[in-house]
Length: 413
Image (tube, rainbow, N blue to C red; front, side, top):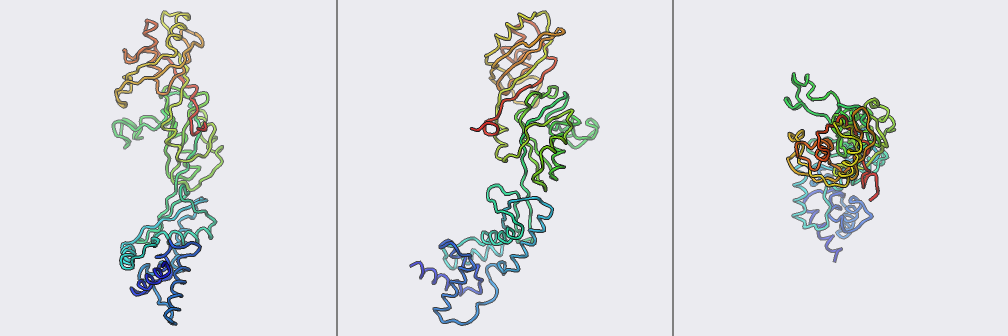
């Protein structure tokens, strides 16, 4: 019977040395709910004392947890957590425990000797009991999947390690000037350490979209750093206009978790970058946005040679709807694998002709190299507009004017 098994196991445990009610009750934690381990252990001890007519007081101390579950000790760990969270904004938390070798050995010894089959690990109970105190004192909620903060009770070092989980902000950005990369480019010579070539900045370009947004966000959220996750990227000499490009900004270890995102929108250099549709988002969406392949619409200024408007319109119709085979462009071979990509030109049309140049719009699959679609890149892109027109064409300016919405982030799947 279960009752006999509980009592006989408990009697064996009590012969090994002084044990507290928490550690006694924890060996039977999986048999019933509605009780704390301390209540469960006290009840079992009381029944055994009644059976054996034992009127002595329970022994002091515990050889298993070494007093870890005494009220004063639980309160001390809760005090340390409160101190660790001073100045940190959070609503949810989770506690973990890093066991000492001695406590782990004591627990394994007890399980081995007693044969207890319904025990709960010591650290699970410690996490829960300290968590109850913290929740009651600070008004915080336990969250197992995505807590704002993770607090590790480091028993060997007698300290609390605080890990503040990132905040993620989704939005779209406009890049209004040319000559700025999307992300920070480390200097190729010194690899970011700083040298004469990069004027000891460690980077090839003075600023980037990533830095213009991220450095403002770090100040506002009082974070320790950031990571920029963009849905693709535009060339350094291209602008990003229209509806903007989707991105997620990950702010690391933020002491402030919620701000009015208008502050971020208004805090960036709006002559260079503007932000649209900012909102908080779940960190799981980072992989969605990085793997997304939304269509793109480009506006291109092309220098015309001897071609007339009608001939160009005919060529654009011919390339519309075509699947383009592009071998990695010469200009990016130093950082991209030399492979052949197949991308579709959904539509290509002439907007106007002015000052010897044509303004055209191209709607395409994600990943099409538009400059090479125009120039041909010495035959690495086929078909191409230069080949169809029978003359060398060159891109004077290129802008991205629209990026499709992303399923799972902006469009419900």
